[in-house]
Image (cartoon, rainbow, N blue to C red; front, side, top):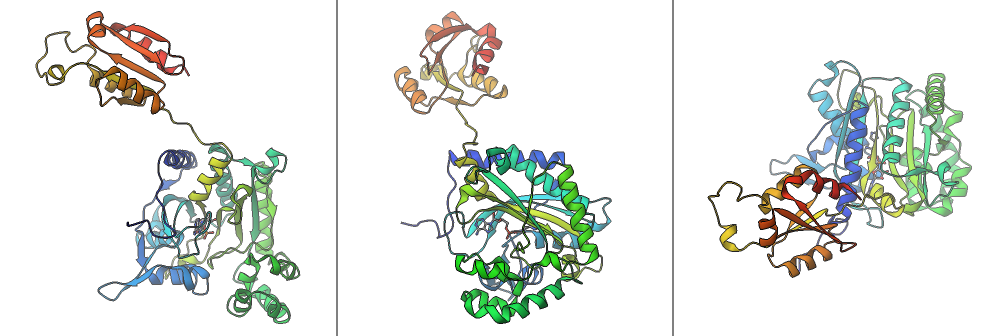
Length: 441
Ligand code: HAM
C-alpha cells in the first residue's frame, strides 16, 4: 500500500469546502484593498532562500528540501514565498510600475519540520506583500487587511469573546529595529547570554553564538523565565524606528484594531526590520500562530538589487486557519440543493430528434437551468424512483425533483422536500416558482 508521505496529507471533502471558503474570502478582501495575484514557481535556486531568509535560520539550516539538478544547480522547494516574490519583483523591474505594488498569493510551501498537529512538511499559505513604500501607514493597512480576512472567515478577536483564548485570536506586534540600532541590541543580548546560555536548551546554546535574536523565539517552557530577564529590543530602538513604531500603533488604534506589544517577538526569518507581527489562536494548541509577517526593507538589496524595494507582508498558515475556523464553528455548510431523478426509459435518453414541445422537462436541460441559477444539482445515475430517493436522502439533498411519464404528460415537476417529505407539483411553465421554492431555506 502506497501512502501519503509523512507530514503531507490529502484534503478531502467536506473539509475542502472550508479551504475554498477561506480562499474565496481572502481573494475578495485582497481585491477590495487593491491587491493582485502573483504566482511564482514552487522551486527556485537554493541561493535565493539562503540569502533571503538567512543562512543561520532554522528554515535554511535544517528544514529545506534541496537537491542538485542534473546540471548541478542547487534547487529548493520554496519554504516560504516572500523571497520568491521579491525575486520576481527585481527580475521583472516591477519597481517601474507606479504606486505601491500589492501582491497576494496562495499555495503550498515545504519545510522539513517534525510533523505534529498544525505542523506539516507540505503546508499552505495565503500571503500578501506590499512593496515600494517605507511608510508606517502601509504597515497599518496591511495589518488591517489581515484582521479583516480573519473576521470575514468567521474568527473573532479575543476581546469580542470575553478574553477566551480558545475562542478568539490575538494580534501581537513588535519592532525589531533596523541596521543601525539592532546590532547594538544584539551585542547587549550576546553579552547577557554569555552569563545565562549554559542553563538553557541545546538549541539556545547554539543560537546564543550563531544568531542570538533567535533565543527570544525559543518555545521551550523551561527557558521562558530566563528569556524574561534578557534585554528588550524596545529599549534599544533608534529615533527613526521609534517614530515608525509609534505611527503604526497610532494608526492601528485609529482603525479600532486591538493589539498587544510583545518585545520578544522576533520571528524566524532574518529579513525583518522594524514592524513584525503575529496572530495566535488558542484553539490551535502548541502551534498557535495562525500567521506571521513584518517589514523587510533591505531584502531586495541582499538579493542583489541596486534599487531599494522596502516592503511589508504576511503569510497566513492556511492549514491552521482552516483548523481554527472549523473548531470555532465558523465553517460554511454546503448542501446539495436538488437531486434530480429522471425516470424516463432508454429510448427517451437515446432520442436525438424531437417534436416541438417534446423536450419540455428534459432532465439535463432542467439541471442546466437550475445550475445557471446557482443551485447545486446532482442528476441521479439511476432511473428507478426508489433508488433515486434513497440516494437523495443519503447524500443530504434538500429537494428531490422527479420527472416521470406522469409529470411529462401533465407538464409539471414533482418536487419532494427531503426534510419534511412534503410533495408539490409545479407546472413546467412556472419555472420561476421552482426557483423560488429552492431559494427558500
Ligand atoms: P512564517 O512565520 O515562517 O513566515 O510562516 C507564516 C505562517 O505559516 C505561520 O504563522 C504558520 O501559520 C504557517 N506555517 C509555517 N510553517 C508551517 C508548517 N510547517 N506547517 C503548517 N503551517 C506552517 C513566513 O513564511 C513569511 N514569508 C511571512 C511574511 C510574508 N513576512 C513578510 N511577508
